[in-house]
Amino acid sequence: MTNLVNQGLWLPLMEQFYTIQGEGNHTGTAAYFVRIGGCDVGCHWCDVKESWNAKIHPPSSIEKIVEDAKKYAEVVVVTGGEPLTWNMQPLTDILHQNQLKVHIETSGCYPVTGTWDWFCLSPKKNKLPVSEAYEFADELKVIVHNKHDFIFAEEQAAKLNKKIPMFLQPEWSKREQMTPLIVDYVMQHPQWKVSLQTHKYLNIP
Image 1: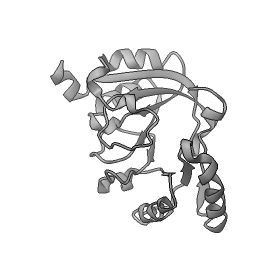
Image 2: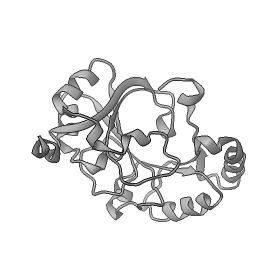
Image 3: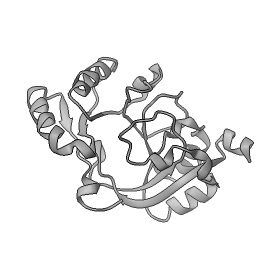
């Protein structure tokens, strides 16, 4: 089994569900989310810390994951945890074979595997993206927990070699303090956009 997981043929699946994308460039669109367990980035404000330990999430075959996904949506969002901890190529191959579009939400801290229709790069200070992640990025989304995160966001934007949508998103527990600052910042720096976790406001997964 360990070998199958290492090859990406089975993955530590935490959960999967059909919902509305709540963040970033595709906010408001229907998507099937596949949350993969395992993450060593260690963001103290992470709202899915139960995803960190891959060992508590039983491996599932990628065939079963795809079988479930194709019942619901045309777009599959692979998230975590940190999905690039694992080899994503087999999963994205079989999803594409089933005519599904495949998006990823990642910190970019591991080498990029998989073939993606949309690559949401959400860098974290604890473990910075590998250089190739900036090349793959279709969208930059930076979580704002404190004022220094605006500086971090600009540092990350400077590493992009193409113009892509860029979002500042308040960390949920600090949304009342940080949202007004983000609004002011975006009005002064209109290359950025505001992202909100609208699924939480809608009380959906």
